[in-house]
View (cartoon, rainbow, N blue to C red):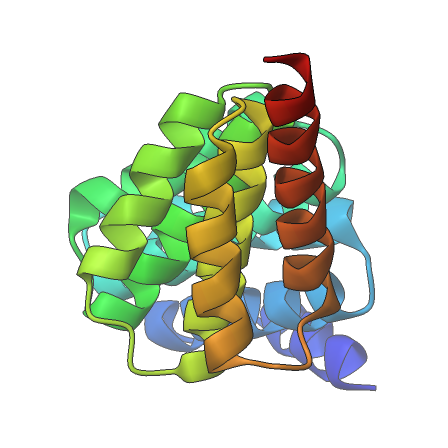
Length: 187
């Protein structure tokens, strides 16, 4: 229903400010229901209409990156997250851009780049413990991929401490411990 309302508002050709917000809200609603193509179209329109407003650009590029990532356009997503990082928004948005870019880099096999982005996210003094747990878990997974088993154990332990229900962190820690046990047996 909300998408129809936003689309109607867009068709009515309101003031530029109202039009920009209608595109962003329509895009957000489309992204929420999995209409990534529609979301990207609306984010593109908002970017075209408001190329200098850092708040609009931050939201549009960050969420367009999510839509692109959802569609498998990982490189396009990384470009969008990088634009957000260059805009230097408030900590929460900046942390979100870093963690999303880290996830995308990891998907492409750039685990060193992913770890650097997760490091930057952690340096932003994460106050949300659930988000912090997720970031530590993601960094642990990237470290596991590059065979930094001790680092993976440390980061997954931090994730578990922050969120004891984060099953992925336990799996990563177990895999890293298993790798260390196999290495010890081989030596």
